[in-house]
Length: 211
Image (cartoon, rainbow, N blue to C red; front, side, top):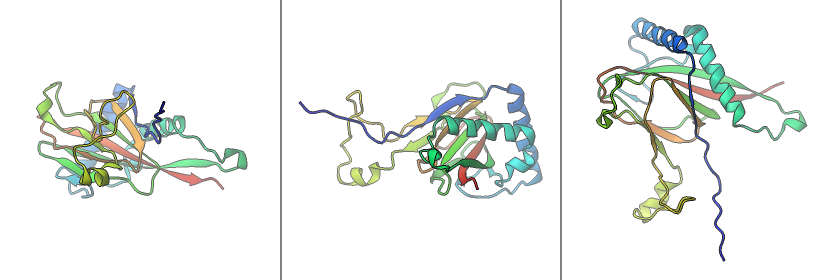
């Protein structure tokens, strides 16, 4: 009898920010930086405001605490197989903020050069509404699928439950939610149509070898 094993799983970690005061302080710091530098930068964002990547400098203690939480989640989900050989690493974080209103989105991309990437939602922009048409979901893409589906777009591999694998899962943002995933995992943000203002923070964690 044949045996099926599911190999090369991709970790996707979901957690919550515990400090409502920290969320409030982060929101104020981001909006203050947006007022100071209204142009921001354009990277993956389609409309909206994307800050510089120096949020650890201008975000204050709340930003450093958020980076520390992301690093802790990374530590909990990473194994250093070279530790017994004296190979030690530390995370070097890079952080920025995004502010979006109706019609804004982020195009399909990954984060080369880092190991883990995180997104924390400071304000989901839904104003308490559960209306699904507000969009703004984080869209994740199975990196194996484009080549396979070009030749047989109707076929899917089975998952462990025997159903068709979901190759484009989504996550609905919520204020206080933080997610972390491998930086090579391709993702985008669907167009946001909420009535409020979406505020999020992105973090890249780069592993640096200790001397």
